[in-house]
Amino acid sequence: MTSDIISGTFTTTLIFQYLLGLTMLKTTLLSAIFILSGCTASDWISAAGGIMQAKDDHNRSTMDSRIKAANKAAGY
Image (tube, rainbow, N blue to C red):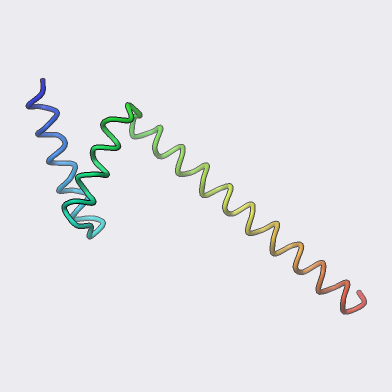
């Protein structure tokens, strides 16, 4: 069981290193976080999607308020 986890961690580390161009230390830490968190891949994807959606909503809200302020200043 432990050897399977270590083997999976090493494989995951190599994949992250190749795909993301990360250093070995960074990919090892990233893999350890994934494994130790107990979250599944779909949990991580869902969380990342929620974060991106919140960022998009914030950017849209900020842009709308700036446009409204500019229109108000221009007399529209």
